Image 1 (cartoon, rainbow, N blue to C red):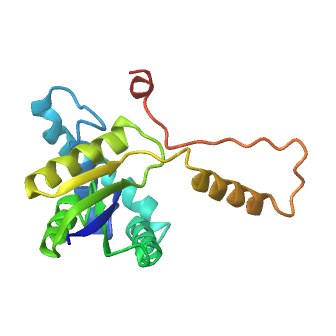
Image 2 (cartoon, rainbow, N blue to C red):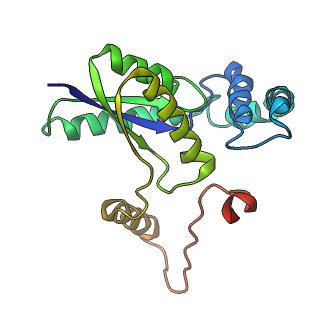
Amino acid sequence: MNKTGVILLNLGGPDSPGAVRPFLYNLFSDRGIIPLGPAFLQKPLAWLISGLRAKKTKEAYALIGGASPILRITGQQADALREALSDEGDFSVYVGMRYWHPFIEDSVSQAWKDGIRRLIGLSLYPHYSRATTGSTREQFDRVAGKSGLEATFISSWYDHPLYIEALVETIKRGLKGHETDGVHLLFSAHSLPVSFIEG
């Protein structure tokens, strides 16, 4: 019987100040997120922009300890999922990041070495966007396809009742002890260019 693997897919983030520029370069090199002129200019422009933005980005990360917490948090989610799935069968859980370590290709390779032949890619972006989930799915499909794994991808879960329930509980905790008359809640995802939204 083949084991099934689940790979939690996320953006990734620099794990040290020295990782900021290469992380930004990887991000800006992806035409699915930000097409920078003609395709042949994408990587040179990505290198230029990453260099121009590195200092300011390092300063921003310095305010939260010098590194992105995304790998730690995603690792905690993987541990919780592994525990939740332990009674359901023989599952292995991995973390794969789009723009920094552990890269999706590294995690898929590890899954193959571990004997995984069926892999479920779970995007940790609740709603679909071409710039996030779309780019991540393309990379996952490309890498999983080369490996020979039977792959499935879950691209969105924004309307799942348990997710909505978790949002409601978080809001209730946040409002506890505060006057709620006249309170308006604003839900905002990471901003997207209008051109992505319209087409």
